[in-house]
Length: 437
Image (cartoon, rainbow, N blue to C red):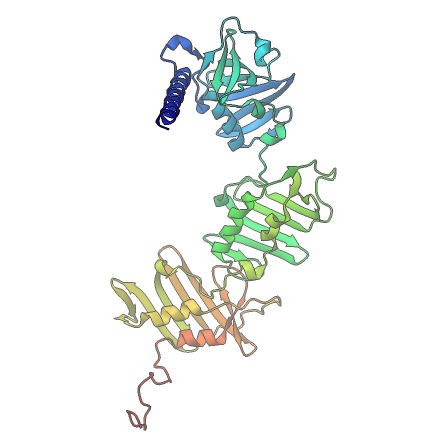
């Protein structure tokens, strides 16, 4: 039994020594100590490359960068996908050195006669760097290449498949290309009607209504550039969709507006296009954001303000008046520190807007005003005639249309600092004994 265990132990030792020897030999092959065992390919960073071409069987793909944005100029002219292109370029420029395969190597044995692809990198100084790309090395994450001096080497990386990819894979699939900060209006026209939000000074307004919800407008503007074409297709000869389900117009401070049209849903997706631009299929779920209406984009608060920006409040409603001024450590009401200032601020914050499809009448005779002031913006909302028994008509002097505020909310705001008619829980009402019966 002991001799059998000894033999097993001896065989394991031999296997371990062999494994360590192979590993040491492999590491030595990866990083040779002898500088002459490697061959320089190029010394470039992505930022050094101004353009590069990939020739595959006589068909050239030409990529050019300008101010950080990539374009494909051949075999078609399209906007390039920065992430995809620079991912490929990163794999290419990191191949700084290669391990020569030998002086007597035949190019055909390594997929280099003819080459799988020929790469020509042009740097920002105008110098060209040419590299032929062959087959992928059978073992290890490497590719055979041949430099202009004829030396065949194995370099780190496997990019043969990327080089022969169809040019469409390098196309930028985004629908919109804009800076959200330069947008001044967005409109969505559909069978449900026209919804438009427009910027005026620091406010956003919902056309035909009043204030737009600033956060929801920002989400819409920032979400549109996230739309992607799943598959590009030729646009119709008319240049637009004859009966679009949605027509989206985005306007900017200086540039022309962009019009995006959405057509019918098909098993392949929903055909959509940018007028004068790209067309293709988009997944229907991605277009859900276009179904927003006034109830989604309209401001729900009658007196929209960020509490941390508020500096002053003036309320004059139906003969009742009060004011709050922010001071160090709290708020003054009518010049005196008000320990219950939250009553007024809460009532103002809880006053809502009643949105409805029917038009809101004119303001009529002014019944009251509410002025809210921030450090850089002040707004006065006039409160006018009643609309039925439940609402009053209101209008912001800064712009927008008339809107409705519930009477109950205005009454709560006007009487925010009046004593409550209800007794405090636990306290006896007048004429009633205290304590348990």
